[in-house]
Image 1 (spheres, rainbow, N blue to C red):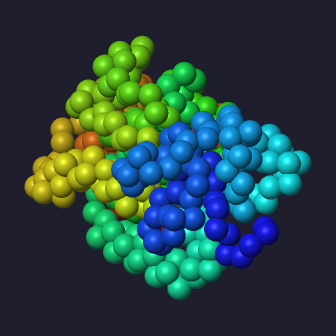
Image 2 (cartoon, rainbow, N blue to C red):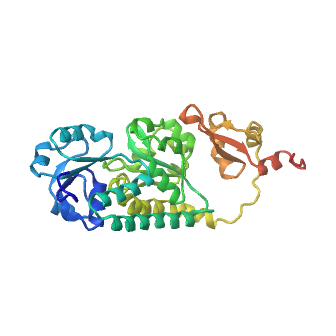
Image 3 (cartoon, helix red, strand yellow):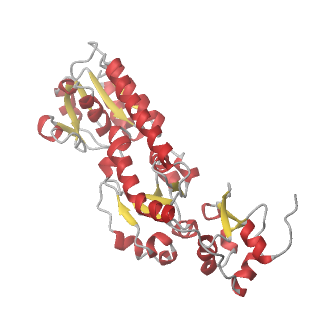
Length: 345
């Protein structure tokens, strides 16, 4: 950089724009991504110079920036062009909540506003901790987050973490750690096998069509589809790894999960369910310890057995996405199958 702190900053993604506004440092911004919509006045106040993977390099150079802020390997070619042109660039590449908080602190340091950035980051940390504490011990609806619809792509790291903070359980937590979208592709059959209670969708700026999700072959067996629990979360709220995700994005997830979580919370204790011969035959194949793959359980029985408390999920590291949920018999099922037999210790 020619000056410190930089007086002229171009932001090529939304999260650094919002962070600078929240720090009161927006006057340093001279150009933004076309996707920047937070706060609302940014669209009136700042010239747009890029999409996400494309940028108007001559326009950026004409703004004579001291610093350009970018995000992810998807902007690597833009970064290379700017560096060759002699522009100072800071490239963020975070994929989780810790990375979002680090980004806020780093942006603060870059504009000599460390104290304000620390206050902002700690405020989010406190909020996350409070919301996680409120969800602790409550029923956790199983959530499938769909980031794209063709191919199906599950939620990235910070989304999965925020689902947990909001009181849900990501059905594909092992995929959330994958930075690249291509490594989070899921088969439709895997979603059916995961049996999410809620489907949250945010199609990278494209409008979500719940009816299209519900109409996928075999998806009528998914509890979320049967109960019409398919909810769109707007991409600017959740798919940019910055303040929006930690505030309005988290609130949107929580709001989507609350009706089911509250219903499960308020439900009276269920009486013992009668065990049909068909269900008994299936349960005899399910172990008390270890696990059996979901694909080996009659799909028509699987959801009934889960909801009646006869079996429970055990997350395992299978080799195929559709095999990562295993199942065990519950003590109630063992007692129903073998009345009078005391469990061994």
